[in-house]
Image (cartoon, rainbow, N blue to C red; front, side, top):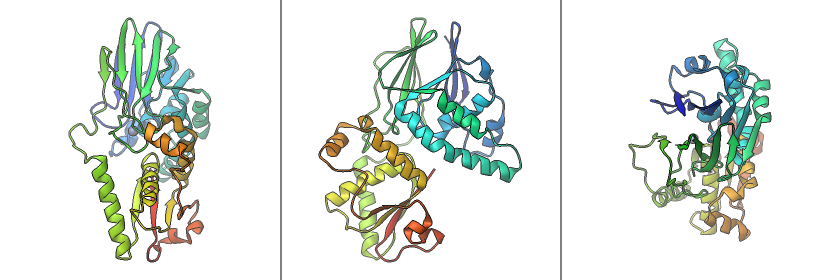
Amino acid sequence: MKLTFCGGAKSVTGSNYLIESGETKIIVDCGLFQGSKYAEELNYSPFEYNPAEIDYVLITHSHADHVGRFPKLYKNGFRGRAYTTSATLEMIRCALPDNFGLLKEEAIRDNHDPLFSEEDMNAILGITTGVNYQEPVMLGDFKVTFFDAGHILGAAIIKLEAEGKSVYFSGDLGNPPTPLLNYPYMPKDGNYAIMESAYGNRIHEDRGQRREILIDAIVQTIKRGGTVIIPSFAIERTQEMLYEFNQAFNNKEIPKVPIFVDSPLAIKLTQVYKQFPEYFNIKTNYIINSGDDIFDFPGLQFTQTSADNGGYGSGELPSFGDWRIFGAC
Ligand SMILES: [Zn+2]
């Protein structure tokens, strides 16, 4: 087995690894470089391998820094098959056009061609198969298994086995306990682990503390007649927020005030979350099975356009007592 780090090493973004055994060449993740002034240059640089020689692509999860260059791989000659979890495939189907729109805008602004075309984007969706956690697939000389990473819906730790050895790619790992997802799978075997370590040197407050801070900020702001504006990632964070608000309303921890989710992408992704309850943890499934819609409650409004929220998007904030959630990412 031979492993080459082609991105996502010594940096957080651009996740991209080549693993080879016998005649089989597999790429794990094909992410965008983001957040540095060199990112665009890196994204436009040729891959360190010949995309036409790659047999399979495995995607750990739907964040752009793990999948955003996959259409470019197709553009540059990749014609194999790709695998990810079923939920991740739907998330990519939902989020990639949004991502493509941003790349296109950037390209027009900077006066060069976009990183890939809409046809490349649609092509990768056509060659990708969704699989379940813990159901191995044979891909050439490799046996490949996806395990729950607990990071965002559908996120996976990927195990590759060949030549009597095994390697785990952690992808991004969750910070448990999270409101919706399971704890990350804990491998008890394996010869090698390729680990993410983005927050390796930071201690986060626990979920209980985070929730307390959020509820307190909301209650205090409503009391003094203010408006709460929450910038929120469209993937996972918005759905976690909705879950927490639903619980907080049920427990009467916060008064019933209008809430706006103001992001078409976050709204679409929330529908994807609803399609895959089997990816949620036991507690969340228990709540769903008891008849509660975890992403809906009285006063919640999904606003597709600024007209839906009374034109607040034009810059004027809602009047006393209203508050809203912004989707970003
Ligand atoms: Zn991620």
